[in-house]
Image 1 (cartoon, helix red, strand yellow):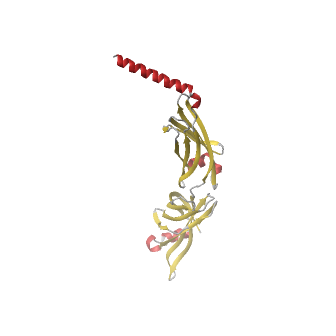
Image 2: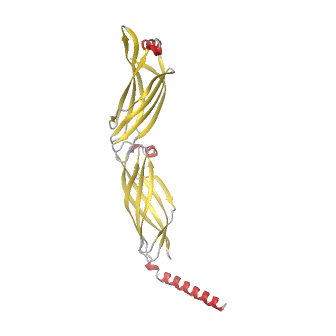
Image 3: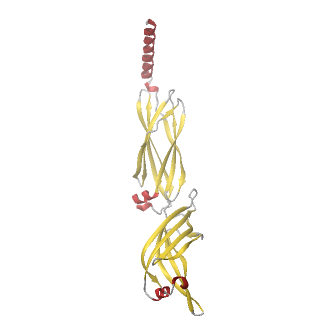
Length: 290
C-alpha cells in the first residue's frame, strides 16, 4: 500500500512539474505557419469545375499540435458565392510539415444564376478565403486566416432552339411527284468566348403523328464564339410511303404538329474538357416555311 502511495505521489509531482514547465514556457509555444502553395484544376466540364487548394502547414514547436478543421468562403465579384466548414482533424508532428489538400467544386449553372454578368467570359475571377483552426498546448484554440485569388475557365452549355421546317422542292419522275424535300432548321446559341465544337448529333422528328426524320450526323461543326449558328438537316419523304396528303400539305397552309428530340455532342478546345452530351426536346405547332 505504501508503494502505491509513493508511486501516486511521484506521478502527481511529475504531472504538476510538467504543467508548471508548460506554463513557464508558454511564450515558447508558437503558432504554426500556414500558406496556400498551389491551386489545381482537377476536373473541368460544361457543368462544373473541380479545384484543389494545397495548404502547407509547418509546426515550429517541439510538441505535436492538432488542426481541428477549417471554414471557408469563395467570392465571385467580391460577393459570397459558397461557404462552409470542414471539421476533419489533422495531427501535425513536432517540427513537422504537412500539406492539406482541400477540394472544392463549382457548378456553372448555379454560378450563372447568381452572377448573370459572368456568363460568356473567358475567365472568371474568384477569391478563396479560409481560417484554419488549431489546438495548441496551454494557449488553446487559435485561428490562422489565409486567402488567395485566381481564375477559372468560363464554360457554358450551348443552347439549341427549334427554328422552322422549310419546304425545299418536290421531286418528280416523268412529271409525276415521287417525293418532297424539306429542311429542318435549328439554331445553336454559343455564349462561350473559347472555341466550342459540335462533334455530332442524334435527332428524331415526328410531324402530325408520323416519323419524318430519325438519324444522326457525325459532321464536326465549329460554333462561332458568342454567336448563333444555324444547322440545317435535310428531310426527304416519299409520296409512296406517306401518300398524296404530303403534296396537299405543301400546297396548302396546314399547321404542323411537331415533336423534335435531339442529342448534341459538344466538345471544347480547353484541356481536360471531355465531350459532353446534352439532350433537347421541343414540341408545338409551326407553319411550313416556303
